Image (cartoon, rainbow, N blue to C red; front, side, top):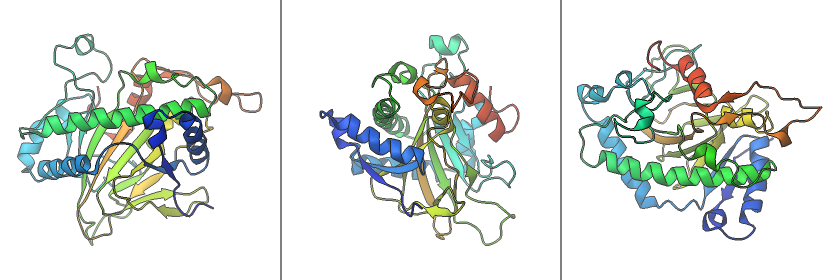
Length: 319
């Protein structure tokens, strides 16, 4: 049984070296079928960029609550903006999560035709009145999106598809960058309350960068919880439910949670790679057989995301 997450170096894939996509595809495929989690090294994003990113996130969360509420999630309806402490329950059967967050999506102008046409989850980002915040976040959003798209090329190869299969399904994606702040877990909490309740992620791939405070735990197939300690400048990556659905459960999305026992504040920044709103999410032919018939009806990127988000947030918070 897995005792630690595999580390996959994708530097050759990022550099476009011959044969690299096949080698990385095999490693991702094995991890995706077994534990559903792995570390990603060699991605090309510098440690200095991560340091600046986290410093900017810390400055935002240090703002007074009334300033953060100026860009509150409820003002968007499009999965953007500030979510206050205990503002969501990733495990709806348990008390609200002990964290606060901030969501950023594809950056569109208010008069963008996609917004005016009412496309699902198309809305302008909400930006706090904080110098440099927008520029820092959009720079990182673009960089981590490229890493995710690169990984999806390897995924395509692993499941017997053309390398570019996902390109036109992720080029205007509903991806979300999240800034998260976890306070030290109080001595007195409600029964079952965690920093982030047990859950699986909704999209295709999650690329998580954290500070040096641990807390992420992954549930193995035998039900035991496995710690996923942070490695400096290395992503933790996991399979999301949408990709599991696309692969007809060949890939697995693994339940995980955050328990901040450190006595310190914890900051993490996940990036959720989601498909385009109109991307058809249909079982990949190579993942379907007489022994494994298609387990899901066809859907789209937007339909699936809406279905999942409405389970997490209060009624009326998602358009």
